[in-house]
View 1 (cartoon, rainbow, N blue to C red):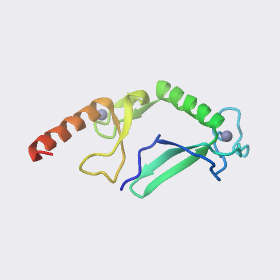
View 2 (tube, rainbow, N blue to C red):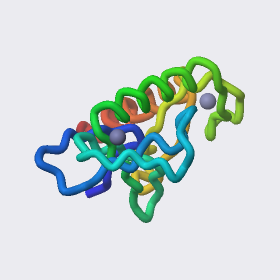
View 3 (cartoon, rainbow, N blue to C red):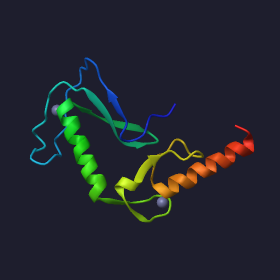
View 4 (cartoon, rainbow, N blue to C red):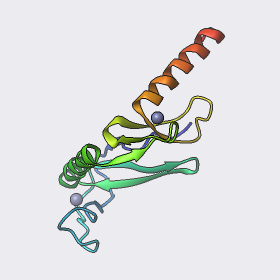
Length: 127
Ligand SMILES: [Zn+2]
Ligand SMILES: [Zn+2]
């Protein structure tokens, strides 16, 4: 069973975890941790060894989502499949069907190609 993908959100109920988010948001110094009760668990950096999780309260979660959206609209990344520069908004994290233990950051057209491949395999094997 592999863990999810970066950006996965789990809502927490009566969590013991404290919110440690917001440290990299504008206007917050790293030592100003929020410390409120965490209500959301957000999956961060993920590789074959596992995933890192961020615990956030509702307020910090909202800020975090806004920050991510802003980044997706303004920043670009390099697709790990075609090596082209793409808007982050156009990119998503995927687990290739032939290597599900790893996470790749791909542009939307490579993701579509991947889906086609899966479909072909599925037809071939009669899945
Ligand atoms: Zn918080
Ligand atoms: Zn690509």
